[in-house]
Amino acid sequence: MPATTSVILNTGAVMPTVGLGTWKSKPGQVEHAVEFALKNGYKHIDTAAGYQNETEVGQGIKASGLPRDQMFLTTKLDNSDQRHPANALEASLKKLDTTYLDLWLMHWPAPMTKDGQADKEHDWLDTWKTMEDLYLAHPEKLKAIGVSNFSVEYLERLLKVARVVPAVNQIELHPSCPQDDVVEYCQNKGIVMTAYSPLGSDNSPLLKNETVTKIAAKYDVQPANVLISLHANKPMHTVLPKSVTNERILNNAKIIDLTPEEIGELHDIDKTHHFRACHPSWTGFGSLGFPDCK
Image 1 (spheres, rainbow, N blue to C red):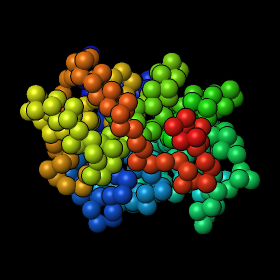
Image 2: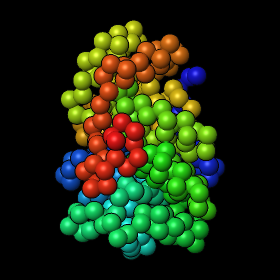
Image 3: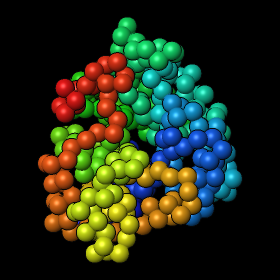
């Protein structure tokens, strides 16, 4: 299939395929990155309360001059706010200086205390129920809700009781972490996938992988373009390249059409070189149901 420029969520809303990720993008840099991206064709910005840069992301949006209704904005409920989602939503809206979110995600199914310890007295499923309440009661504030870092095991538990099917599941996705089980499950349920760390994180070995560099040479693009384009060439996928440098922000937006054979070659990388940049064990909740983390 030719690469997409947008996908349709289960709410009917349009979500641009390529968004600017802002994880690890520091205050002082991220304002400019967001402003520059929006002035140069990006229509989708992804942040999170846990990134501690929502205020600066909001400043970048304002500085871009792009009308709010012409862009798609995602933020995430922090793990330490799982007992108080309503307050957290208001805090994010205030910091981002916006009246609504296009998408609000549960960042991890891993409640935490304010000092970063696993909060095992609280069930993330109760947090989801509150997020549903807020979404159903305040359509003017929340256009869609979803999840992040959810395995099939956790999605099955959620969907047994969900009144609202998540619009999106944002997970680590790249040729060395294809997570086919999660992708297939979500696609069967109408849940859009968003790929974070599409390059496999900073200084990724994927940028030097022979398969990636061969395809990049064929299309006269950077290896990063191949890795980002991989997701745009799949149905119901969006992708979040991140950078704070102008040149890379521009370059990352170049999407190419890949053949089915090339997509297959990229997927085969996982057979000999599997890795995760972000292992879920840091949360204190073990594998979170991901088979390769058990």
